[in-house]
Image 1 (cartoon, protein in one colour):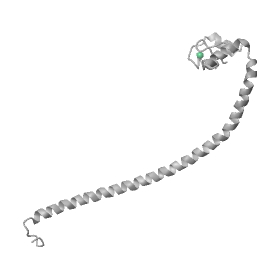
Image 2 (cartoon, protein in one colour; image 1 turned 180 degrees about the vertical axis):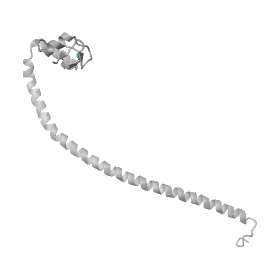
Image 3 (cartoon, helix red, strand yellow; image 1 turned 90 degrees about the horizontal axis):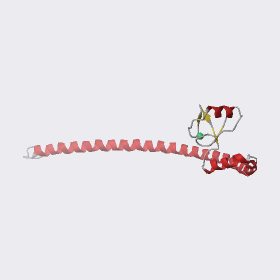
Image 4 (spheres, protein in one colour; image 1 turned 90 degrees about the vertical axis):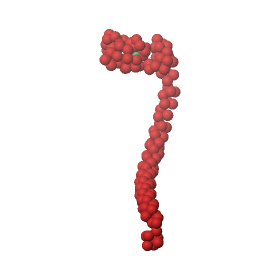
Amino acid sequence: MIDTGTAPDYAAAEKQLGQVLEIVDRLETAALELMESIEAADLARAGAQREFEVLKQGLTVARAALGARDAPIRAELTDLLGRRPAAADGVPVDYRSPYAYQRQRKRPALVNTREQMCQTCQTRIPGQRIVETTLARAVHTCPGCAGWLLP
Ligand SMILES: [Zn+2]
């Protein structure tokens, strides 16, 4: 009866079979989409891995270049620090204490000005101080941060 399609529940079985085939079809489609996603992710990962290797190589080169520059700079710094006490002795006594005060407060000893403003503390500098500093007639400090004005 089943072979001939005359069984009483043949239509129901056929309907269920159709539903099962639809489910299988949807699952196969989903599986294919997942496999495509996995392939795309693998390709992206491989590309990222190659890019990472290139960047890693660049970092190694940059570190080597930095290391090559480091030694001369450290040698120069050691030399300059060794000469610093002798140079400090040459500074007029009147400037030593303010300089030490600035260093103690971790402020720059020398400050730039632009448009009558201290570039360190943004305090307005009197015009007369700017003129005298520019003409090298006097040594003035910023009224805000006490740094010596640079011409
Ligand atoms: Zn200042």
